[in-house]
Image (tube, rainbow, N blue to C red; front, top):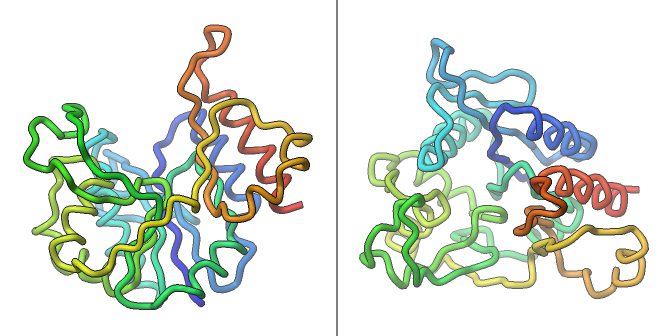
Length: 245
């Protein structure tokens, strides 16, 4: 089983810390290629790679994430032959051994799976300004798993992808149209952390967490008037220690 994992990333102090936490485990697995992708405005080439970061020429903006992802896919799929492509983000910890086992149980083509939502709302910053996409079934952007054939099709037909809506919805629109039988709904694959994770809690509920492959860290509240990224970083460290120790 060969996997390509791509985490969206932008180059700031908090995300650099998260990237370094990810690197403590990301490259341990022989048949798993783990990369980050970030925009860089000043570079000459459209795509450049430095170590494990794929830099795409452009500006970091919310609605540019789809473009950044597709450009990175195009570059990396020319470099690696894989069975599945996984698109996640910088604050999500991936249990790679569980991910490998999960993918081994999937049909190889065509597959589009992960935690699924049904679009029923408006979100103008995400490009959802009217109800034309209402009812779109899509996998949330922290845990998108697609088979290689779908990823390659997206690269080869990148002009048919919607770049005016948020990335995970854009993926759903494309895949539902061109691979209508590919979707596999799986609500048990990801845990969204809502508070501070403590090792003692993990030890007591480890059996209940057996199905989780992805651990998304983004607290929705502000604690003591401090933005939550510091707490997300704390949770990420706790999870990596618990999963990989």
